Length: 119
Image (cartoon, rainbow, N blue to C red; front, top):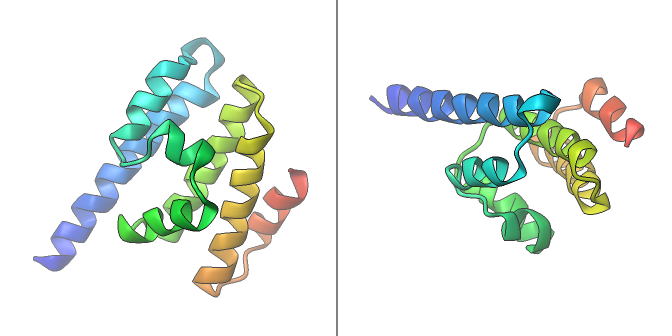
């Protein structure tokens, strides 16, 4: 039963990330208001993403039990969002989120390091 609930949670997060990706990665679909509304379904408001203390922002992922791969996907989406709505803070959040993944997961990922270098 616990595994089933975890799988359902991961599927819900994956579906949300796919919707966010569709909004940010496909230019003709970009709708900033829709992006933030969709993100609120995952428990993150625009204020939390842009203005909250980084530690509180990172802690929210742990509280909501997001897997590391999905947190990385979220950081990728922030990078894509920054291309549509230039905001240096989005890039910095993504970069720090990548670093958070490396530090907290205790795993080394060349892919994440490469993404950080590009920022």
